Length: 146
Length: 146
Image (tube, rainbow over the protein chains, first blue to last red):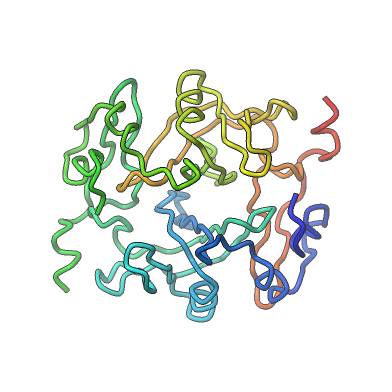
């Protein structure tokens, strides 16, 4: 389905590889220059959040092993934890079959969510209600007092 | 951060709830009327794929408990497994703190990926290479012969 270099991995055996620079140069960024990135806690498997990266954020994240997104609301780099201290260490960056989504396996310090909860997906659709299914780990006000 | 009704859940205790219809009516669909949806295998925690949903796909998915996306490339509903037989049964739909991403806990029949692999995130960035880290469960050609 993908036409880029990453499509060569579709039928490749486990252990086969492609040059990362070739793949990076062909990533299908959207018209804002962004690609979605899912952060997953590497050991528990909890899906923590989804945010967006541009090319520079991807490169910085790989170079520093600390996750850096692009904030669409603030239009600037969002070095996760820079304000709150709740950083994400990168364990591995993965790409999907057509290279249009990133999966970041991370080691999250404290809560990933600004509400103080471990992850952002605490709203569950149950019948005709949307129910809160987890409690904050810490007082969210404490996240921004550093 | 969200201004919609779902922001009322930010500081709510576990078990609190909001009317789903109010939340649905205020979801921040992008200019194409879409919202990203992450599919995660409910028991193993594997992140299977990311695709997109419009309002009708969300409603159908909840009504049928079978996952239906919107295909951006084909510009039509993509009832996962309709062609391949590899359906996704919905166990639970969740929303993140600002309601702009869905997390679908699913029970995936067979592989989720068109390459025959269990999930789509089989490309890992390792050093200066992008390495294939999983094998197909089945011959991908068999997926489209039904």
